[in-house]
Each structure stands twice: as C-alpha cells, then as structure tokens.
Length: 201
Image (tube, rainbow, N blue to C red; front, side, top):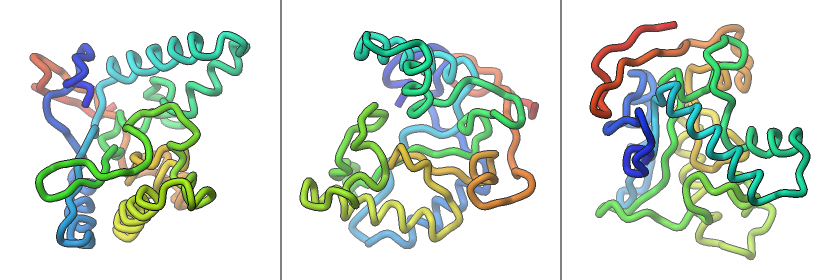
C-alpha cells in the first residue's frame, strides 16, 4: 500500500516472517470459499515507519488545532506506533510479525469492512460495529469473519485497527502473556523498493 502511495523507502512486495506467512495460509483455509485476503502491509522499514508517524502527527495537528501537543501525540499513537527498535517499545511492523489485511472476493475486490485502511476514525476500532450493530451490518459480519479466522490460527488483533494483526512480536507477546517475543526487529537494505539484504537487530 505504501509503495502505491509512493512513500520513500517503501517496499514493492510484502515481506513477512515465515511463521506469519504460514498462519495466513491456515487462516485462508478457514475463510468461506468465496472469499480471499487482500494484504496491505507486512514488514515495514524504519524509514517508512518514521515517515508514517510524522505524516499522521501532522494530519492530527491540522485536523485538531485545539489539541495540546500531548493530545496530538496520544491521538497519533492510537493509529501508528512510534518508530523504535528498542525491545520494550519496538514498532510491530519492524519485526515482520505484523500484517495489515482485509477481506476480498475471488476477483480481488475489497469487501465492506466499514472504513478504509489506515482511517484515523473511531469506526476503525475492531469492535465498533459490535457496539453499533444497526449502523453497518455488512461491515459487522465481515469484521467477524476476518477476526475469527485470524485469531483461530494464533494472531492477536490491535483493538483500534480492524486490519492489524500480530504474531510473534512484542505486542503479540504482551497480549498472550508470553514471557518473551519470538521476533525482534529487522534492519533492511532497500534499493529500488526491494529488500536486497537484512540483519536482525
């Protein structure tokens, strides 16, 4: 998605940890046969995370001029994690253990999930339509399908974003009560929007 948006250092392809890829395959087998997954984003280079954080911060300032600096930061952190490789505060996408995705039909057309990807909106919360079931029954049904298929194979969901799921990274470890995470951060050498080399940090 960010390559399509022409964000510097973004990736032309989606890269994931093997364990994440395998679980997406398992989740795909759970879906109704007339549905598919459409992937938005996986591993995210540090430069892209930094760009997105700054972009969302600026958008929040413009949209809410009445906010204090603390409120702007808090609102931004609801939808994009601070760019960090530190073990306790590691950005989930820097590990290859986070995936952003939606449901589609077999021709690759996105289904109605209630908001667009990356919408900074209260309706982006995974349970929003559970609390407002009469507002959009189709989105409610589709979010349940996506959520249940992903949770069944070991992913956890970030509650403020219906599209974001984790496996093996630090946020996943916190949610499941694991003493350590499986995946740490990755630093990639990106040339022409393709990973040419990487190292674990």
